[in-house]
Length: 464
Image 1 (cartoon, rainbow, N blue to C red):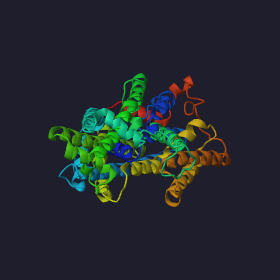
Image 2: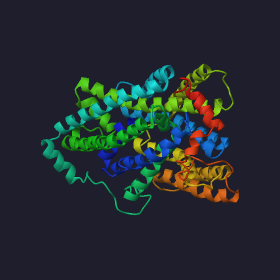
Image 3: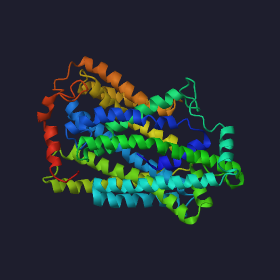
Image 4: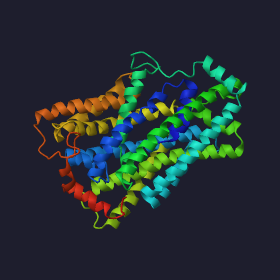
């Protein structure tokens, strides 16, 4: 869940503003309760390789394909955004141009993802996280040591500038000073979508041996969110304290996303600077590699298996490698197109991309889980209306991007439910597919084509 957004985007936000956005990260432990007790059991009960198998069981094959295609499109753009904005941020810290950084991240990620699959993704993410957190901690120590007056001088400087503020109390959804309720509502919606509808997250539920281990990993992620939030928001505040003490060292021509890389390049010892630059690259690669692997899995599982496109499991494995390579190339090329120095904030752009893409997917899962009356036709209508609502908010209103996902989920669920009433009750058995029927013991003996297909896939090492 850590990315280059964490490493460069969050410190730039707290450097330029305050700790208001930190409340959003603290919503992750709240949503973890839902993930452990509702979402993860859903997927393990149907033995899903792809998150979108649930949509077929609950609604129809058409809704499954819509969800999987939306997810794939989102992650191709996500790869491009992460690589391009990371390349721009690193331009002041390395001799590489933004385009060269994008190519380096893309080629390395494509190589080990194509060769190693999900196991390579998980182990490299583990190592990259250690480097990322260790580099961040070293940076914070050096920053605090460089402030005039030491820790007490730092505390006075940032306190006088009101850098510790964590909430804005107003009701304006379009204000640049983002309101507390917007942060809370938007963050809960984003994390509900990620933990329920994002294949990149859901596939982690299924690669553990037992549901107890899957639950432990979710809780571990939720708990580690707190120190990680303190660390990276703290780096941004420490950057403000450092450059308040040494204003002559701050280049007025750079963007806020380049402030931390500038400190790395100019103020850190060479060896440590290299480690932290490596951490930024690692953070970007961990995000990109997850996107490559999860989108390849979704395409093979949701599009190729139902068509029986390959005769053997080895054929599906080769297809997964092919799609990993092809999607990685597409994301990298799009990243080169997206290298745009006019983008003001990595953090804001990333939030907007997530909001526009994940709102409908989250809405479909919420609709399916919370309603017995929802059916396939209603779900598709709700998804289309939800997408239109989010696009209209982005294009024609000043409403903060933090609310896109919440608006997409709400409109998809409300319209989807009302539209379903026009087409009658769903005809399929909903045992185990809603929160009302989740614990029905009969579900364990069901043998729908989707469940059987997923179980057959699990019998080989193919995609898992």
